[in-house]
Length: 243
Image (cartoon, rainbow, N blue to C red; front, side):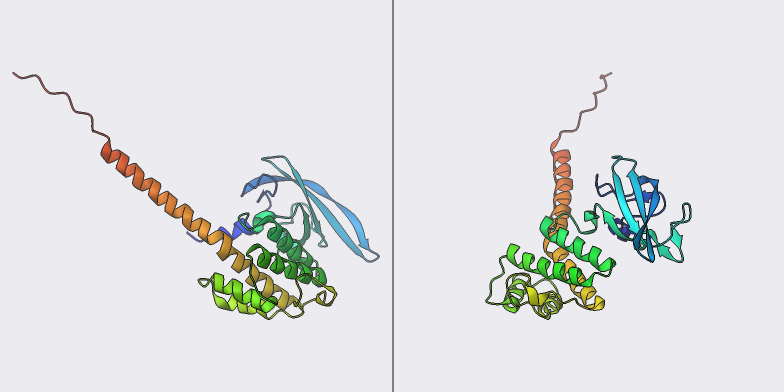
């Protein structure tokens, strides 16, 4: 069967199923409560969509510049729903695994939201801030940014070192906080490279070890079941009366 795990990182799966950011249920049914139009600018309109989870009954809001018509909104011009919406409330934290520290999830989600709306300055600043927070959480030591990145790479030698090298090449990151000189927007392709590198590192640090522990725990549980089964005496079948 084809691997479809990538669907877990989406907001909308199709016209009837989505991943709810409220109850955190994946592949749950939702209802479309309709949309409203408003003028985003003098010559640009925007549609507001309201979606209700059929499990927890919470309502989320989604914005799109695309004129999506009811009953035709799954795919229009080859665009999927997830790509059509540039902003959603609440942001879909299930996209960034919940085992990653919340502060980092929030910054990455904000960075991706800004990038989707082409707000590259905000996206760049959030990405920088997320990296600083990671260095602080992991207590990476060093006199400057590059030395701290090298210390983090040394702490996790099993992670592809090229990922840390990519983060080490970010310009204008010489202080401990986002400062005036670091608000320069990156080109979208560089922003995407830094974000994906950061997300991969976070996945390796916080998600992979937990998944390994869960698998080992499952195997041990199976082993214990076998031990208990062997230790439990089998019931004796009744003896036939002697003739």
